[in-house]
Length: 332
Image (cartoon, rainbow, N blue to C red; front, side, top):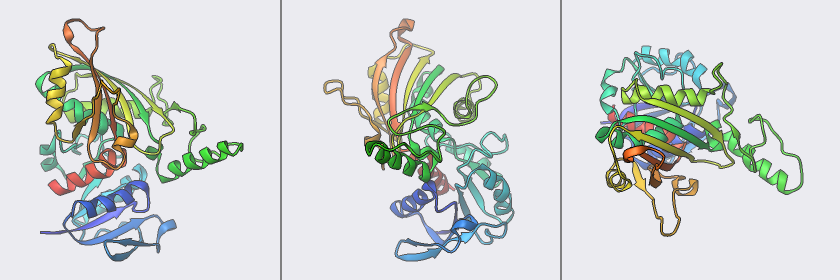
């Protein structure tokens, strides 16, 4: 059994990752259509021993397509996903366009795969920092409900796309050569610096990335009452986000219990070596499917052992984006 696949936004960082994961996982496709903006139309992409020509995405691009993997930004998803659905495709959308739509399932396969069945043509892929943060939290929440979650993110340049990764590399070269840093993508210098996430600030002072983490987690966990607060920061790392996660549980829980649960949790690798002070780093997670978890320790500021601190790292382009979408497509 194979299916016909379209990749929308194929020339971007996530689009390229879609292709490498399709190949790695032997995703059963019978035909592949690669789509992008006018700018990239006509480009040739070698893939699995064949050459594919990038086509400009239009409302007519989805005839005879079974699954359309979208990573072309929210405005393009809003413009073209309905046409894909109308043509009979199921859209797995990596943008923020449909995530909070009550009609659209928001899915992390390790957490709520049953939601896939409820789709009406579109399934939303959550934000990268949401996915990376909650894959290890969910198995703990299932055995001992989390009442409150405090997250601080350390987000890689890859979250802003291929051009942002190049900007980080270029700025590092410029600064080391004694030149001023050229800024095109980020509002501030990213090399040798860190700054508050470059998404829009709301009237409450929270940026869009922080708000997404709160709303998406509640929706995916089907737990509107969970208290969540987030601070999202960009750091000068190419790919793989890190997050510091503080959890307050309903009942007492020890670091040993947390380690035992996470050792067998799907999509999680425990890297928690206190003896050698060795914990997850972006270079551990880059190119890997799992979310790495370490620094598992009791939060001693909370009574009755109800608090736990975690440190996680996950590849933003893989589990944070392309891999999660392809796992959804596999279940479809």
